[in-house]
Amino acid sequence: MKSRQLPVRAAGYRCLLICLIGVSPATIAAQEPAAPSPNAAAPAPASTTTAPERRPRVALALAGGGARGGAHIGVLKVLEELHVPIDCVAGTSMGALVGGGYASGMPAAEIEQFVTHVDWKSVVAGVGSRHLVPAEQKRFNDTSGSIELGLKGGKIVPPSGLIASSRIEDVLRSYVAKARAVADFDRLPIPYRAVATDMLTGDMVVLDHGDIATAMRASMAIPGAFAPVVTDQYVLSDGYVVRNLPIDVARKLCGDVVIAVNLTKQTTTREQLIGPGALISRSSDISMEANERVQLQTLTDRDIRIDVDLGGFSSAGRPYRSARRPPGPWPRSSRPCPCPPRNTPRGAAA
Image (cartoon, rainbow, N blue to C red; front, side):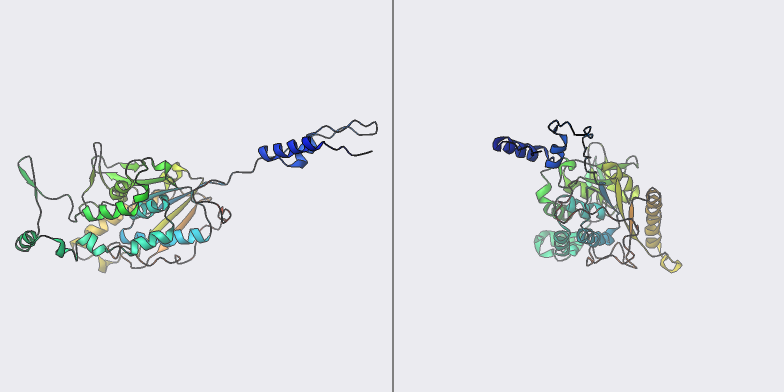
C-alpha cells in the first residue's frame, strides 16, 4: 500500500500549527485518522502527552545578625555557582539589606563590591567627616560634647537613636537606586519582603510595598542605636526582636522549598558576661535566639537549612567580612537542589 502524501501547501500549514501549539509531528500523525484498509486492525487509541511538571518554587530566608549578616553574600555566591533558582526573598535586619539588593536585580558580586567600598566608620560613626562640619558647629561640638536634644510640646527630648541615620539612609538609597521606583515589592526582579517590629504593639510587620530603601532601614533600626521609622500606623524598629529568621514569611510569599540561612554564634561563657553592656547585649540575644528556634522547627524534609559558623565574629564588628564559601558541611540537607539550566533567569519559574 502506498503511503499518503500531503500537498505542499497543506504540509506548510501543518508545520505552522506544530510551531504554534508546540505539539510534535509524531503526536499529530498519531491523532490523524489513517486511510481505511480492509486488512487493517482496529485503530489504537490516540497517544496523549502530559504537561511538564512544574519545578518547586524556592524561597530564601536570610537571618539578621548585624555585621555578621555580611556572610549572606557568600551564601548567595555559592547559590549562584550551583545555579539554584531563587523565586522570592525575605530578610531581617542585615538579611533584609543583602536580600533587598539581590531582589532588586544585583548579583552577589555586585552586592559584595558595593558593601566593601562603603566607608562604614564614616557612615555609622561619622569618623573622618569633621572637615565637612562648619566652623561654628565644630566649636559647639567641642564645648558641648555634641549632644543633640530636641524640643517637643515645651519639653526637652533626647534623640530616638544614639547614631545619626541620615548617612545610612543615603547609602541605602544609592544601594537600591534602580529599584526605588518600584513600589510593589512583588514586581521587583525577585519578590521581596523585609521584616520589622512595631514598637507600639510588639507585633511583626512584613513590609511588602513602598520605598525599598526605607523598608531596609526600618528592618535594621536597632532599638536605641538607630531612630525608628515612624509611619501613620507604626513605629518600626529592627525585626530581630520578633522574627530574626523569617522562614514563615518566605514560605507564605512563594516557597514550596525554603532555604533558611542561619547565622550561628559561639556558646556564651561566664567570662563574657561581665559588665552591664554584656548583660544587656546577652538579654537581646536570648530573645532573638528564642524566636529563631521556633522558626527552625517549622522546616520540613523538603527545606534546606544552612548554618553559617562565624566563630567569634561579633555582630558589632566590621559590617562586612570577605565573602567566602560558608564552612561545611553545606548544604545541610542531602536532598538534591532543584537546579535549573545555567541560562534560567533568576527569579523565573521553569
